[in-house]
Length: 139
Image (cartoon, rainbow, N blue to C red):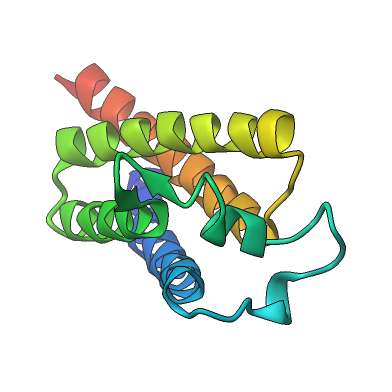
């Protein structure tokens, strides 16, 4: 039972880190000048992603979608809403996978902050899936 509780404790913590990273990406999207914190070289750089063709998804800033997703996951996990948490993390994983494929194979860019967001989403997804399966097995 302790493991189950530990999973529930880690999802909000990781969601808060995701919110902070998404806020950074949203700020980077909104300011006119590129932010050099994330610039390592031409291939490892956040600015082409936050200001380029991948910055918008049907007219909505991708960073805002991520921010809303992490906030929803945070609230759902604090309220122990298993299905909503799993649903949001599943959507987040698929959305992150799409972005990763486009970043690497289309834009030929790696955004370090995006990679961190994607790793956090992967961990939160696995935790929420484990919670869901444990609850389902207990029924």
